[in-house]
Length: 321
Image 1 (spheres, helix red, strand yellow):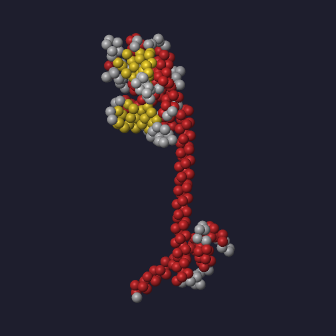
Image 2: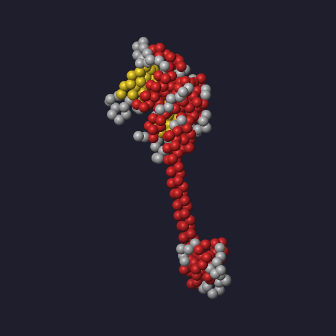
Image 3: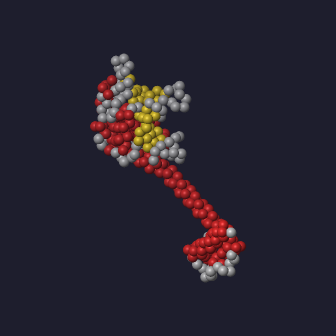
């Protein structure tokens, strides 16, 4: 099962005790996935979903909210093998009118069988906004597997609805954005911590914890990789520096000799040649008396300066001759 389906199944098990929140969730389900179909003189409502669990949620939500006997039939599309479609159809006219009036979805806002934007009276409270976003996700939302990528989206048919949904999500300090995809508009969130927040808003707490566990593991791996890369870079830097130091010391030995070196320089020069892999700290402990890392570095820099000065002097004499 995909992570997206896990989230929807968790949300499908929730049913708010407050009627105003149930109406907000139902309003979103109708706006983002409902159809108002005119069949002769008897228009009816139709809801579709690929999940039987979500279909059950739609059924329970309508039954619990209105406490009416409505004719709802669940049909499974046998032509689709992998993605079976479940349709909930409400034929009873008084029930259709009652649902639309309660969800604040007037007939005049219905165009081509789809509903207009949400009425702000439905989402006045923060709890109702949460329920509305939950309904929008159940109806037309999806999530990628967080082990692969962070991506949360809700597909909307027109820009006005998309902007309204984005603005509602942003009231929870979540940076939702909109992108056009073919004929639709997609309200999306890509940042991991922000997706955690939207799951919290929708009250998908189990999915939230699962996502947090994935994020922690990813962060640990990234931290380890950064540390390994940093250590590898430091080792490479140390190797390059040691190679340069040894080249300078060998140059001094072959062209000048160690006899005229200041006190302490000959000893560190010999140790560096004998222990090319040793760190500055390790070289310092081999001296008698031992000296610190900065003291070793100071002496090696002096040796490099001697070698560089002699090279320059030798080069100048070559050109003068």
